Length: 272
Image (cartoon, rainbow, N blue to C red; front, side, top):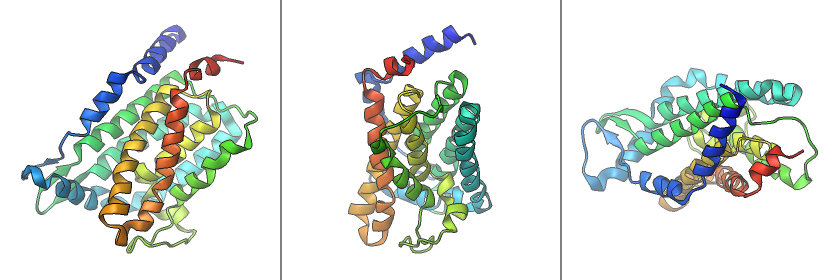
């Protein structure tokens, strides 16, 4: 595809994703109910969602956990040393990661409801993956090192905390074992990897794909709201630490979303 065509599509995506009707679509999407092959009554919708997420098939693929913890570390190193030589590889990996997350985190086989799918999450995560696929084609992300004001680095410790996910897998209580940097399932979860990907984009902003930044951060905000509600208000005695570990998703997603809406983002990207 010619560069001119890519630029036109990119401009249209950036324009469309900041329209009021685009956000209205996302609002109405939140009412899409989960799917359960055995059926359920409308008042059970929350229980169905919880049952699916609590028994998601991701738990059957624990052997993959180390791969998706070590691979991002390698990619981060490549970005530092290869810079733009690693941008397409990075975007392809992120897209694949989100596709896997969509399937592994939101589908379950449960005794009570049969095959279950958290439909709205599934759709949103695949949409995020599509925008990262687009970035792999358009290659708007520019990972050339440039001097940044020190305050922009506030995202790094929070993203690191999310990636580490220092929680005991059995109790979900604080457990700062460094081995979790390499072996837990955080690398295959939307809530822990999204702060990492967004943190990288914010550090190179505004020379990044604004549409991809916007969609990823918007979905991140939505998912953060749901999780913080459950962790801090529905079952805080058990999930409070899990809630703390979702604060990076909320804060970095909000920050990235605000950056993506700056009217001068596109112009700055084209500048110097």
